Length: 285
Length: 312
Image (tube, rainbow over all chains, first blue to last red; front, side, top):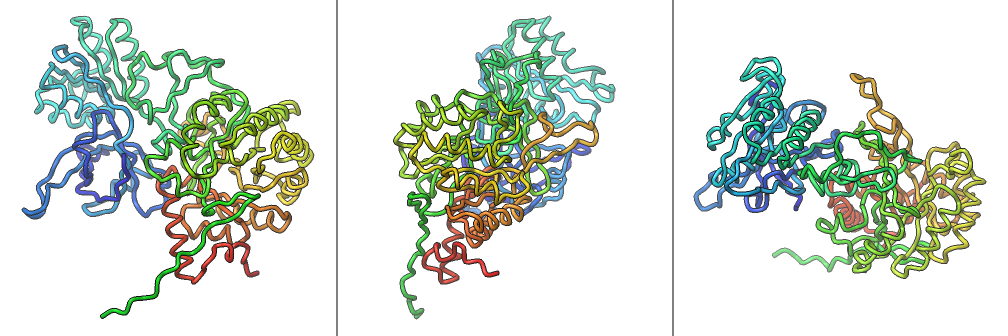
């Protein structure tokens, strides 16, 4: 965990509204584990005030600029332009100064070596699954079920295929792959074989649906969650999720940044939203 | 050959607040620094003037539903709901970590009744590693229709008096800016026995998602912090310094030494850095370096010469 004042190496639109940014990032090849994230800051700019959390898509090395220099280490993040922060990011180029705090959080656990793995990704939620696939593909059969609203939301699938991952694509409007929800594909796969481990990342409704299906099939599930966060280190308490057994009397709030962003499904409270903790005071920290 | 300049004498940054000698005037604001351990990997806690903990209550507190935070222009809104582990868990599990450092620990606390305030203060008073108490009075008094203690001079007087009886440690009262006349509330705290004041707590604010037409915080309203509130905070510190004779700690949107200096010049003896910690975990270290550089460049040997040096 370190804060690097570093630079952008490249920043390209890979699908309408989706960008892939490569950032110079010393030590990340050694340190970063699949599922971890960084807090990204556009330097010397206000707004945005706060950093943005981004899952690490992949790490790697680029050839050095000169033969006596060490190769350049980088990370790649993928983002969708959704607000003021990502709008600024969209305009960054090679050499632009940025800051990276990380790698942060707990990553995925890899599970049994010879058992089949199913990755479920919804839109931008696909990002943290790539490094995971890279790590697991040598020991296990890995399938990716990728869903999105339209074909524009289906990103980097060919890269998963190049790793040797068997990929299934579904879109809600049928513009690419099967028409329908990615969770319908998961249901089918688990009916065929439930002796697998599932790893999911995507919008919350998708994750909740995946959890329902996996718990019905008694299939182990790890999820990577997204949350609004200010600090990324467990101080602001903005990014909490309800832990298993959370009640009004015995509250259990887990920081997505510190305990997560990857959780075993059994660590979390699912389904009920009626136990919202009524606070006496919302105005103070 | 370049002539060697005479040896640089490092400026004196230490300040004294309510009998506490602090090595410098920079400390975190409560609620932005956890219990210290969250930032220890990034920042030498021994470099700070003091450590201020997250606010503690008598019993653990769950906090609010999410979303609890949102970004606004040059600031952020939060409605965390004072989630904390409670005073007993703090003493048992968080205090030992903080005691490893040679930095005064200021423990922030709050209550929803006068008796709760008094009970927490009494427990903390017994802990030798706690150097001072900071009392958050921006909480509703549930026994009196939920009116915020800190907005009513009578309630301030009463609760500060009761806490004062329970502790002989330096007592800092943290003021809310959401009042008509802060000089009145500041004076009420001073007269009731506060050894120092810290201000400002967050300003109440609200933001709306125009597409969903819902408030952007689950709690609807929240506390605004960050650079956006700094001019208001400087003004309020300036006014409080005129009204009281006890030391004042300035808080509000400090991200750089230049910001901290504004507060010191209007008369704050120290400053607290809040939201900036979220943005940059090294923020306080950077501020300290810049503060020293400023003093060197301006020929100031002792930071105390700057404090209250406002020319009007």
